[in-house]
Length: 156
Image (spheres, rainbow, N blue to C red):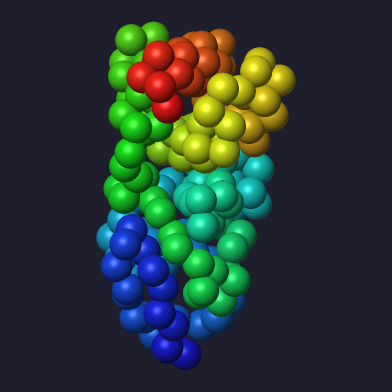
C-alpha cells in the first residue's frame, strides 16, 4: 500500500503495509537511524519521536496511525528547546553510552514545548517512560530543569 508521511518537514511516499511500525520505516526505509530500537514494546523510550508535537513510541505505532500527522525525528528536531537541552546535556555530562539519548531528548523537548516551566513532578512524569541503561537519571532531570531555566531567562 502506498503511504505518504510528513517526516521532518518533507513528504515521503512509501510502499509499505499499513501495520508496519513507524520505527522500521524511519530506520530501514528512510535511513533515519537516530531513532533507536530498544524493546519493541513501548517500554524503554529509545524509539521516541514526535507526532504533531506529542512524544510517541514509534516501535508500536503503525504508519497508518500517523499518515495525517507531522512526524519529527531527532534528525529534524530544531528550535530553542532542543538547543537549550543540548547545552544542558553537555554542561551536566549526561551522555554515557548514548543509546537512549535521542529518545530522552525527544521526550524532554516535547515537555518543554508543552510546559516551558515544568516542576519536578512534571519532569518526572514526562521522562518516566525513558530507560537509561547507564543510570544518568539525576543528571537528565537536572538538565531538563536547567534547559527550562535557560529558556525562561531568554524570555521564552
